View 1: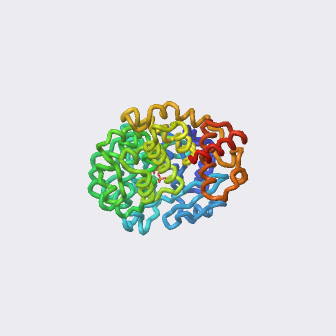
View 2: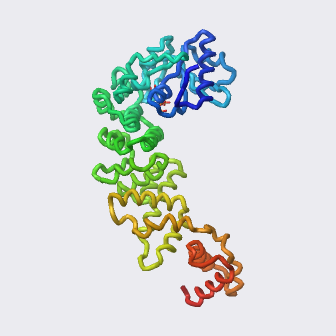
View 3: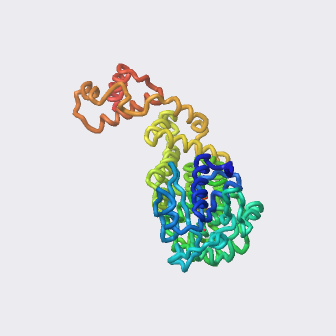
Amino acid sequence: MVRWKQADTAMALHSEEVIIKLLEHGFEAYWVGGCVRDELMGRPVHDMDITTSALPEEVVSVFERTVPTGIQHGTVTVLCRSYAYEVTTYRVEGAYENHRRPAEVEFVRDLKEDLRRRDFTINAIAKAVDGMIVDPYHGMEDLEKGIVRCVGNARSRFQEDALRMVRCIRFASVFGFRIAYRTWKGLLEERDNISFVAMERFRVELEKLMEGRRPSRGLRLLHRSGLPANAKIPFIYKPDTDLIPIVDEIPMEQVVIRWALLLYACGLSAEEAHRVLRQWTFANIIREQIADILSVGEEVAALNIHSPYKEQWISIVLKYGREAAERWLSMAGYISSKQSGVCPVELLSNGYTWTEEMRIYRLSELSVSGKDLLKLTGRKGGPWIGEIMNKLLVKVASQTLPNDNETLIDEVKRVISSNE
Ligand SMILES: Nc1ccn([C@@H]2O[C@H](COP(=O)(O)OP(=O)(O)OP(=O)(O)O)[C@@H](O)[C@H]2O)c(=O)n1
């Protein structure tokens, strides 16, 4: 059994079962692509792709549970226990349609030919079930030197699939690799074809780039490549702001804050950020999470220095939620190391504690209700109830008032009589 240090043990074990079964039926089969690359680099392996000499229908006949994912392009998904493996037949690719996918593929029986049609040398390494590495295009050497290099002619590789140009920059950025001269040259020569790539595919690469080690480098490379302009994507990157390098300092797990900081550094308001993120085809939920962080910042910028800071902060927390508020505090902390004035010092040092100390978040948690207010005042219902209840919520949440019925009724009386 081959030991995979970077892969989930069960995932590796079952993928090996798949390979062995293909071998038992007289076919060749290897692990290939990202899993081999990531294992060699000591990076976590997320999925394990298999390449085989078996034709798609032969793969289907060998396994009990398969899904014909992209059978005309040679890919069958093999289900083994709770794992799914993409098993792709050795192939070379015919003419490409719109620089996106080959109109037809030709299945071949030689692994080296299959590896030759792959994008980069570091992705063109195969691993056999006995652990032997097949690396005809010297991907291991490029891994060691830290180089992203196309297999063979760069222009041809980029013509086949224009997304590979963005992948090239993504790999360079995430791995901290440099791009081979001819590969970069080929990219610049082919960059117009990026317009054939769907925004969703571009965005997925952008997301991976932002989750990587040094997003600022990838953003700079993207800017220099001219790809975003050709893809007609609203690329908001500003090379001259000294805030962008801070994006790299934010932990990868907090990628939402990285995005918010990038958009902030490029001068976008929450509303503009929302629009750009929609054009980039981000899911609603992520879009809102990012824009909410910026909204918190906008509300902080508008705080009234003559009113109690704590209560004003708590009302922002209540409006956008604790997560967005704390994310903004974190982002403001990073920015403050480079730029003053983004957040009042009092808030920067106390914001987390104030937020942590909140005991209630919702009107329903107050010990008075709208009905109590109606009974107490004898007035007709209307928006005034919501206004008073919200004031009470802010005061209780920020611990200016205790959450007991008697105190809150007194406060209501005071507010009404003073017409606040
Ligand atoms: N445009 C592409 C996409 C993929 N590949 C080949 O298919 C493999 C698997 O592709 P994919 O799973 O999309 O990416 P990974 O290389 O595995 O990288 P990651 O998981 O980091 O996206 C790649 O390694 C590469 O050999 C390619 O040649 N051209």
